[in-house]
Length: 310
Image 1: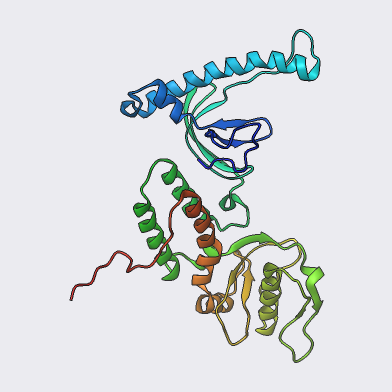
Image 2: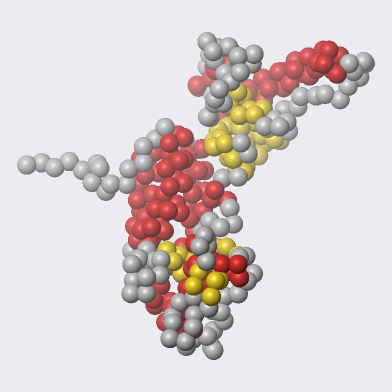
């Protein structure tokens, strides 16, 4: 768990240990392992299920202690005489968790309100966003689950290298690697349509990459005379877009409609797609942040583990 930083002195003195792993508007997550090791000398020998049980027992006891203290809080701070509605409640037992930032976390829940369960609760992490390619999100999700369940870094690294190879060698189709999004500002950034003898529309400054990609797709559709048999991308359409390598048309990114992709444009994309940039800009930079949070070093050099003998 990633501990809170810059804890105020009135909450925890600098020389003391802060066991709060994360806090939100109405929730607090406590790193309880040190307490459990103190209470149960045989903690390491316990099964995972038994550890969950003793954690829940400790949480319920502290729940009652804190709830009792709320009576003083209600009287001293809110001048509430008699009964009040302040209550601390144990919500769930978490075997492991990853906290990236406020409202961006993942937790492996094994008990919730006393009921044994097995679920992964993910909130706000980048790979869950609608504009993250599902095939990359699925890989990130699997990596996160494996880390929370104790998988070694060496095994995670191995699978990442294999996945990178599948992206670069074409095993994973480009249609699965495109960034999904909706076209919302196409009209705003279309400064001037291509005139007779021109190939490209003039794009206004500041246009997002996805919008430029859409405009260039429509330009190619018109230039190659495909607009009579295939649909142009219009405002409000759901599309995917990908980065391209340097090409004769100097197009750095292109969008497409997955359900209506002309074969000529599909071939152009296959020949010019920048798979390396797709991997690095979409997945790798997110994984680097994840690795840093874990205290790991991300190194995809295939020769890292090799030794040469002379």
